[in-house]
Length: 148
Image (cartoon, rainbow, N blue to C red):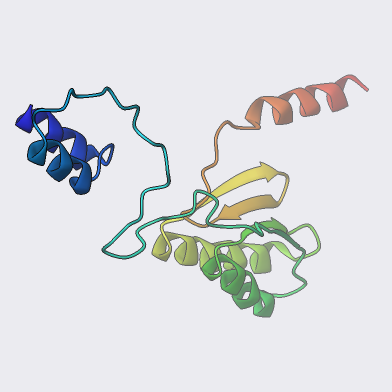
């Protein structure tokens, strides 16, 4: 039973004191004890990591008016916030410069960028994963507008 006691001690189901008591008194009948389910104390320090590491997840909606505001969007991405960028109020040349700047920022942060509408982009840091696409909806939308 020595191996079994060591194994149970390793799993934390039995304390060492119980093992010593049993070995000192071998004449007594061994009772089957149910292990106590007390929280195990970590002796080396706290290695507990919260599953919910980000409590306040924010999505920023941004509608820049000029290229100068691209750095503010990049700062949000660096702070691990997702940003929806609406470029409909910016000239096309300015919009291209903003997208180029954000693409470089996203590449450096290992994030991703997705087009979710006409001149609307979703920029996410590496902590956010984007699944699916909206291309079918855009195609249906344009078909609907043609029928009108």
